[in-house]
Structure formats: structure tokens, C-alpha cells
Length: 327
Image (cartoon, rainbow, N blue to C red; front, side, top):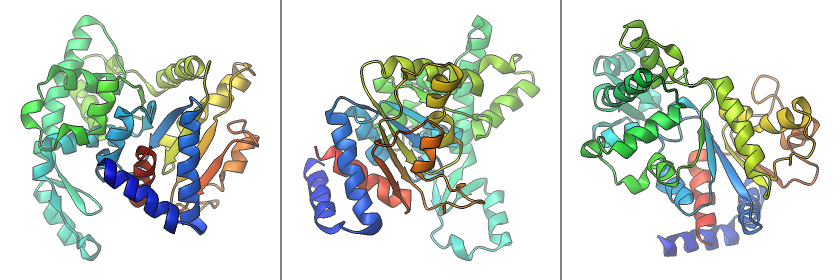
């Protein structure tokens, strides 16, 4: 892929000169410069980036040390593994825009859960992973242990018991790469996910007794404080945000929390910021929160490199990753 990455970088530098395209080039160059200065990068994943198979480039970014921590929705955490173990059972529906409610009902009856043009099979993906996860939830409960959602998934991956189900090359799974590098994955609002729902159902069915066997969102913030303080001691941490919502809003708040609520003014601000989103900055959408507004919340500084790319992240993120990987 090295040749391809270099070609993509060359193509972008030659053609992406104005408007959103120019920001892609500038953000990519600034990402590289941030890393060359010894900086670290937090990646945040909203939307359905795992089902969009972002792992095809994100996994390599992680393996090469271009990403050092991830914050993502529970859906992105699990959907990379759904794809890993059930890819061949996914159903593509490129004509989804023409679907009627009756067409959607037909998918429901086939136990196919639609995400835009991609249908995730319940039995082969969701139930298969639930069965594997339940063992580790029960094992932790019996030992009186508690873990974060991603730690349970790392345990399952390291056990090797899912390998017999792999339907893609594991090098294209960002979760496998993250597990190999043992990077932290912060998952706020994990209950808003299929496996989160399944975990609660197992408690209700008395297959689990302790609902706190999985660590909470507030504990996740406490963990993030520890990670940020330790990691930022000797370096600057950048923030690469894909989409909006809790995946981005949760982690970026750690800096004002440390600086204002813990009154630690020595804590560094985020040293780089880039957001890819097609959400309009308005009262009813992304709250008008362009990067400069984040200065008033003590998240970014006046001199922090800041970029907003208003486009489809499924197109733009792989291009930026390829540009960075060309180095």
C-alpha cells in the first residue's frame, strides 16, 4: 500500500487547493507536523464509521503509532467486531433511498438491521458476539472484577475464541489493531449500543447479578483525566474528531475539567484540532460550535491549529489517513 498512499498524498497536494479541499490538505499537513514534534493524537468516532469499514485505513494508522487513544460510541466499538465475525453475512441495499416502510419490515423479518446501505445480520454478528461477551461478563462478576467496555472486548480478542468466525483479514479491523497496541478506548454512554442493551437484558434475566460489572461513563471520565494528565506531561495531545455528538463532546471536556474544576492550570490545552462533519453549525444542529468557540471553554488556545472540514467523513477520513500514512 505504500505506493498507493504516496500517490494519494501527491494527488491531494496537487488538486485539493481551495475551500473544503484546501482544508483537507492543511489538516493533513498539520497532523503530520504535530506527530513529528512528538505529539500524540486522540481520535474520536461518531456515526457508523465502523460499519463504513474505516478500519481499512484506521487500523494501519493505529499500528504505525499515528493514533494513541480513541473515544467512540458503543456502536462503533462493537460494529468493528460485528464486521470482523460476520462480514460475509452482511447484506448491501444500495437502493435504500427508495425503500418503503413495508420494505423495511421485510428486512426486520429477516433479522437484518439496516445502517444506510448496509444491513447487519442479528444472529451471525450481534448474537454471536453477545454469546462470547457474556462469558467474560460472568467471569468478571464471579471474581468481583469490573472493567470498561473495551477491556472486555480486548479479553475476548486475546482469547482467540473469535478467530474461527473471522470473515475479513484481521489487519483491517481497527479493534484488533487497538488491542495489539493496547491503546485506551474511552466509550461514553455505552448503554446506547446493542451490546449495552444486551448486557442489561442479561442482568434482567438473572444471568448476571451486578449491573456495575461494566464500569460507568463517569468512571470513564475519571480514567480519561488520568490518561490525559499522564500523557500530556511531556507532549502535546491532538484531537481528531469524526462527526459530532458524545464521541467528540465527552473527551474534549477533559481539559477544562482539569484546568477549571481541578484548578490545574499547568494542564496543556489540546494541541491540534480537526473536525470532519457535514452537520451545519446552527442552533438546532451542531450548536454553532466552530473551533473558536472552544477557546471560550478553555479547550483550545488561540494559537491551536484548528480545522473544520464540512464533508462526508466516510470519504474524507480515509484520504487524510492515507496522506498521513504516506510519511
